[in-house]
Every structure is written in structure tokens, then in C-alpha cells.
Length: 196
Image 1 (cartoon, rainbow, N blue to C red):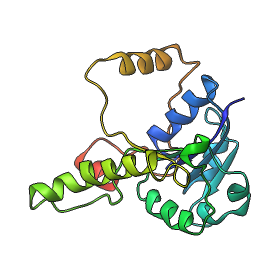
Image 2 (cartoon, rainbow, N blue to C red):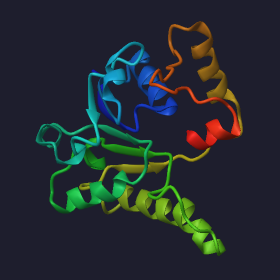
Image 3 (cartoon, helix red, strand yellow):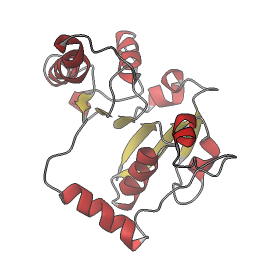
Image 4 (cartoon, helix red, strand yellow):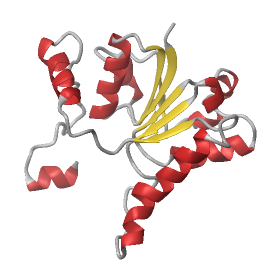
């Protein structure tokens, strides 16, 4: 049986590909997506089991997920770890602890924008904080926290990219999802990039 997975930031390119890959490779049996536009998450080719609009519902306070927590949380929006820490202090969270196989994966720091005036201000969000969280969640916090992973780059070898491109090439495993809302997709111009 596959795992229960929550993808925060599910409506973007990475979220849509993550869902499809997990589903096709039978890694997940139940996938919940969190997005501002949840309706499109329930349609082909994504087919999330459940989609939640983050502007209407707080995923972290939903009792049905606290009673049956996720095995994996993929945070593509950033900042959810801080909320999970608060929930663990209240002894009930939406993701299992590391000792029960719970994992938390993020691709972004807690805040999207930071000021880089010193070397320490650069190292802190990208190295020191993630390293501290990874150690804490794997050592003395195993019984309370999910295993923290901050993946911000791939190895230099190309096998990941080659595998992903082959999935997209055959068209059955990985399909592009085009945002069909008005004015989308944005043109690849200075104005379009600013608007995006």
C-alpha cells in the first residue's frame, strides 16, 4: 500500500509533476494538494484525491488529518515547518513523527525574500537552519518530528533529469499542466515575467 502524501503548493509546475510521478510509480495511495485553485487539482492529469484551497481552510488544523496523519509532507510554498513545530508543541500534528516513518521535504527556505548583507545572512537560511532541523528531527526529536529534508539542488550527474525527460517524452507518465485561467500562461516578455 502506498503512502499518504500532502503537497503544499500543489498547483505549480513542481507540484503537478510531483503528484503525477508519485501516483504513476505507486509511491502514494492518497494525495492531498493545497493550492489557491483546488478545482484544477482534481482534474486530469493530476487527479489528486483531495484538494484544499489554503485561503479558505487551514490544513494544519483539520482534525481528519490530525487523526490520520500524512506519511510525507512536500512543502513547495515554504514556511510550513514553523507551523508544524507549533503543532508538535500541542502534541498533535498532520504528519507522522520520524520514528513512525514521517518525512517533511521542502525546496525553499521559510521566507521567500531575505537580505544578504553578510556571509552569515546567506548561510543561515540555506545551510545552518536546514542542518539544525535535519539533525534535530533525526536524533533527539525522532519521536515528535518528521524527518526534515531541505533539497535545494540535485547532484551533478544527469540521471534525475534524464529520467524525468523520458517520462515527459512518452506522454503517459508525465503530462504538462497548462494554467488555463484568464491571462495565463504569461508571455515570455519583461511585462509577462513581472506579472507572473
